[in-house]
Image 1 (cartoon, rainbow, N blue to C red):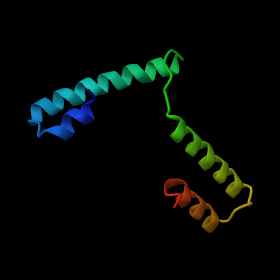
Image 2: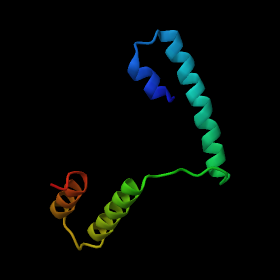
Image 3: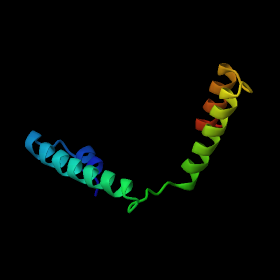
Length: 83
């Protein structure tokens, strides 16, 4: 169970929340070190990976002046809500 799952289901006393945040901070430091050593990789769902690829493609088109800012924003809005 993640910290966000724990905190969203109940009202935690302040000291319990502080302990959870401290544990989370320790894990983040460890994860940063492992990622920098290339010993840990993140997993990304296919849906979000494809969305990110499309977003980067749109941004590149904007940087190359193939799209203006309005076209970029409209295309990005369709990524989030395609209907």
